[in-house]
Image 1 (cartoon, rainbow, N blue to C red):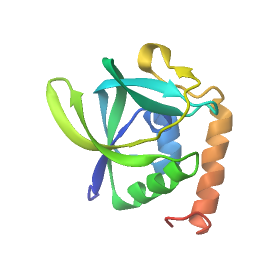
Image 2: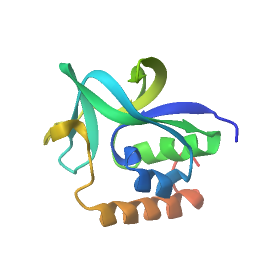
Image 3: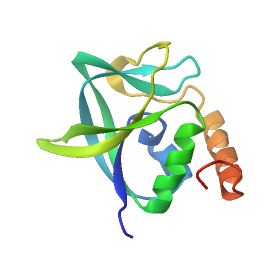
Length: 143
C-alpha cells in the first residue's frame, strides 16, 4: 500500500468505526494534539476547530492512499464547507507536519473534554453509506 498523504482528523474520521466505514483500514497514529485550537461543533453536530491559545484538540493522524484521500476529499465537501490547511501536530514529543480539513462556522458550542462523538451514531453511519453509494456511481464531485 503506497501512502499518498497524511491527515489530522478530530471529528467524524477520528471515530474509528466511522473512519473504517468511510475509507477502510489505514495506518493511524493516536493520540495526536493540535495546539492553540479548541474543538467546537456546528448547529448540525459536525465538528470544527477554532483558534484558542489556551487549548488544544485531540485527534489522530491518518496515513492515506490516493484512493482514500479522494474519498475523504469528496466527503469533506459533502457535510459542509471545509478547506484543507497544513498544520503541525504532536504525537508524544514528535512534531508531525500534516494536513487538516477545517471550516469557518458559527459554533453551536465547545466540545467539553476535547473529544467529539456524533449525537446520532446510526444516522451518521447511514449518511456515510448513502455518500459512498453516490460516490461509487460518480454522482459526487471528486470521483
